[in-house]
Length: 232
Image 1: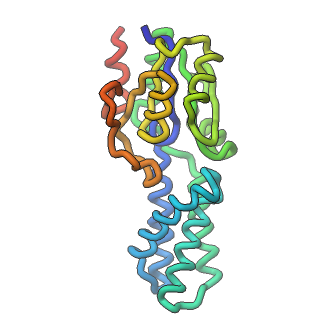
Image 2 (image 1 turned 45 degrees about the vertical axis):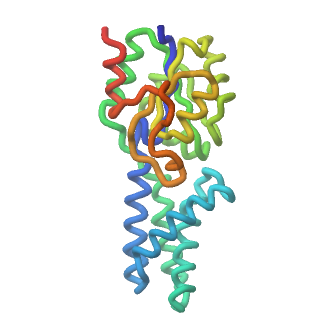
């Protein structure tokens, strides 16, 4: 019997990647207005952003820096002088990702309320910049539905086991729920906890695997599908 479920946050309960895509689109318009190749800028920005994980981790500095560095590279390649005002506008647009509320995934609240009503303990284990993630949790309005909220730099088997220890639930009576094979499924399997993988949008860094290779992973299309797993 499942007694606890550990949820991911970004793009599992709320749409984070949507914010990045919208900011990236607006920054690309600025790049094109400056007479540069927007398609080339976007391709390089996406690649640089993945590379910059090694430098910045998941801090709020990474994405704006990646956008600006892609602009600087585009200027160098084209022989066009760097415009400091354009550079500042691109950085400012990129930072809006961390200021705007992330829209909730459809039926996120209903799903959590339905599971909680059945006596299942709920935890949120999400990675990223601590200040940014705290704000997203607050803006989501979902915090009261969790028995425990933990924000980490990277998800590991140890972080999952730590959550379960604090909940007083064994691995055999728990599930994890997330959309990333890299950051959600693999750490869960390594911890000995069965993962539920939601087939949702993830950014390039998380796309090392398109889908879980293991047979012992529960695959679902929508977050609300969880309610079908626990009929009343």
